[in-house]
Image 1 (cartoon, rainbow, N blue to C red):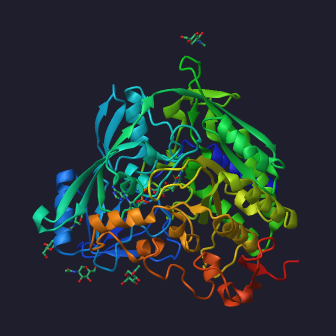
Image 2 (image 1 turned 45 degrees about the vertical axis):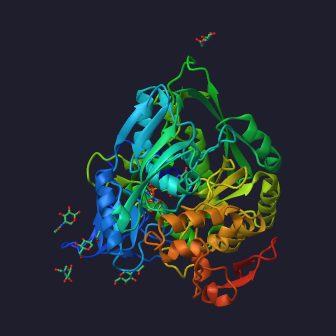
Image 3 (image 1 turned 180 degrees about the horizontal axis):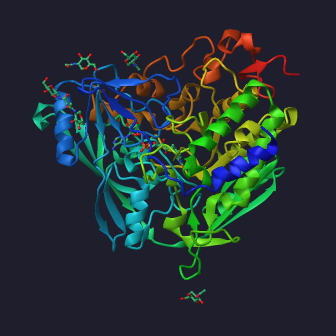
Length: 579
Ligand SMILES: Cc1cc2nc3c(=O)[nH]c(=O)nc-3n(C[C@H](O)[C@H](O)[C@H](O)COP(=O)(O)OP(=O)(O)OC[C@H]3O[C@@H](n4cnc5c(N)ncnc54)[C@H](O)[C@@H]3O)c2cc1C
Ligand SMILES: *[C@@H]1O[C@H](CO)[C@@H](O)[C@H](O)[C@H]1NC(C)=O
Ligand SMILES: *[C@@H]1O[C@H](CO)[C@@H](O)[C@H](O)[C@H]1NC(C)=O
Ligand SMILES: *[C@@H]1O[C@H](CO)[C@@H](O)[C@H](O)[C@H]1NC(C)=O
Ligand SMILES: *[C@@H]1O[C@H](CO)[C@@H](O)[C@H](O)[C@H]1NC(C)=O
Ligand SMILES: *[C@@H]1O[C@H](CO)[C@@H](O)[C@H](O)[C@H]1NC(C)=O
């Protein structure tokens, strides 16, 4: 496709937010007689592409019902897992063990229970979405100060994986650090009727385990969050050359409360989000409706995917670089989807209320159950299919990491155009947390999205460069992988990076001594079982292993296992006829 045709496609894509969109598919499917069910994630694919099984799904609507579900399954020694309405995590966290597990869905645990305006607290059931939470709080003049940018997550699920927004101020950007009380239903013995509700507040140390639990302690029923009076902020995106990025990141994060940076390494460009609180009487009614989270016409999704498939299969690095520049410019010119008044973008700064600027996700809203448009990654239509590598590197090491990536770009200038097609590397600030499985130090989180072929044996363009960045971040610089994203290899040895892991295990042992809420995957991630990496032909292409022999790449397509270009300890799948 010509450059021009692609850009008009993109423009069509980005400005067509008013078309009818269908809501995402339910990640849980059951046979008509309800004897077997399967679960996957919102992308329709776990890192190893398996589909998980369960013999039953239950939908409690109150804490009382939840208690009786957990009690009944505990009495039966049934393995359980909590599932949410959309199942947005990439790894296999939601899979119960084996074929006969039970899924406990929080779909109907979706009520806001109470709001104390004086104390600025809000008590919600765990299946409440971020969108609901933000909206209900704003109605009484309150706001959650920091949160993920995508509002389709549930409060239980986002806490389960330590999800965050971006700030170095206050208690930091992780939602779980604003939790003042959790009620969690966990297995118990006959003396308690086989299930027990624990009420954990800030006086109880177990709260530090329950705040980020990977779902292995039991089912969180209710969460009380500490909020702030609703405020306004002022946002300006500033694009700059990336040559001094390593020097800038530290100061920038401290200077602006909601700072983040989007980095386009092959374009040698970084977009700084200058974002601060302003007095509530500052005029402006801005709205954030992030373009990539808007409903996208299926025709456009298919066209874009086909273009990328062709660029990949013909090794068209130039084509990818041209497409990525067009995409970036389109996004930047449209201020990523921010408007000054909810309708049109007229210029910076964009000023508005926190609840209208902190998160978005209009592709989740449905007007009709058609398939004219959808979220870009909806697996029912031909659209985006990608891997996501996300890790946080402690601030003192970030400069070195950035410079290593820049050295790779110098060696392979077109190497990272592919990830710029997915809006580059999103860099967000996080702070050390008291949660045992939370961030260990103040850090910068790098969020990288890139092409994944529908065929697991097909390598991607510049496979080696992206793999080297993954191994640099996670191993050379000791980055902490996001629990709800990443490919298997990122979790290799991860638990050793957590100082309080033993404290977490002690709570896990007390709350669920039989491990009914644990699975092979959670045991592997927590370092309690081997087998996290899956060694087989082509495994490195899918991040199921780090290659140690050529067959882990794909020699028939010219990809061999070789050391990294600047990180010699890395082992990556390199295309040997590429130069
Ligand atoms: C488009 C998109 C944008 C995203 N943006 C961000 C972002 O800006 N920042 C960020 O940090 N992350 C982001 N994420 C990742 C996201 O935060 C995590 O994947 C999150 O865990 C998903 O929440 P969920 O409600 O879908 O939970 P699920 O993925 O369904 O569940 C996650 C885990 O929590 C457990 N769990 C869920 N509910 C409960 C409960 N009530 N009690 C006990 N355990 C429970 C589940 O068993 C599972 O182990 C994004 C993901 C997507 C798809
Ligand atoms: C299957 O389970 C769902 C959800 O619990 C329920 O709505 C439906 O009626 C059940 N179907 C049958 C045939 O039992
Ligand atoms: C349920 O349906 C499946 C096919 O969908 C069938 O194989 C199975 O025997 C049925 N089980 C019962 C108990 O009816
Ligand atoms: C789920 O069940 C199917 C059919 O029995 C099986 O092929 C598949 O491997 C199972 N999934 C997992 C993760 O065990
Ligand atoms: C526990 O077992 C009983 C008897 O087999 C069954 O009726 C019940 O549905 C089971 N409970 C759960 C949650 O699996
Ligand atoms: C906002 O309020 C402050 C104090 O109440 C006042 O000094 C200031 O002039 C007001 N600003 C605007 C833009 O109205």
